[in-house]
Structures are given as C-alpha cells and as structure tokens.
Length: 146
Image 1 (cartoon, rainbow, N blue to C red):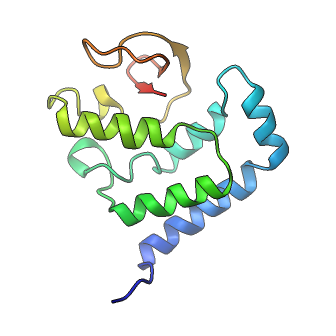
Image 2: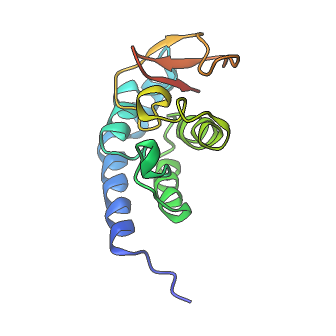
C-alpha cells in the first residue's frame, strides 16, 4: 500500500504550509484571538481565494472534488499553525450538512457559498431557512456558520 501524497496533494500541502507559515505567527494568533471575530477575517478570505475552502466539495457545488486525504492535508497544516479560523465548523460541518441535506438551490455556489471568498460581516441571520446559527459570517450573497 502506497501512503505517499500524490503530486496534487503535495502541492496542496506546500500551499497550505506556506500560507500558515507566512501569515500565522504566534503573536499574530494572539492578536486574532483577541479580536471581535476571534480569528483573522483576512486569513479566512485567503483560504477562500486559494480555493482551500472549496476542496472537499464536488464540482457540481462549486468545489474541487477533493478527497478525505486532501482535506486532511489542509486541516493538518491549519492545526499545526494553531489557526483559529472556523474551517472545521464552516467547511466540514456546515458545508457537509448542506451538501448532504440541502436542496439543490441551497447547494449552489451562489446560495450556499461552499467556496466562500468575500470579506465577512457578523450577523445572526439564518444560514438556511428555518436554521439559525449562534454566529454567522455573511456578505450580500454568502453566508457561513461558525
């Protein structure tokens, strides 16, 4: 059995490692933790711009169709950097819930925003009709639970 990362997975690892190393020093982490959001909105946006929030979702939902190993690579590096961004809660839990149980309309890129890229603002608006999260990130057309 071959446990080596594929070429694409190695590129994903290198990208995530570089991003965390260059943007998430211990002092920066403390600053992010003390902020109103409790994490860096700019770093969260970078994750989206690089497509790291879209990795676990199928192409039909605006994602890249990544595997569990691809997600593992990203989450390992976010964990290594002690990153505070809500990747697990938003991408894995909320995004997974929407892709498994959401309607076709809720699961589109424009409505579910599985590959979120815009700068957030904090609200308590429902993220899915009939479901309210304690906190959500929201832009004009994008909404994330955290």
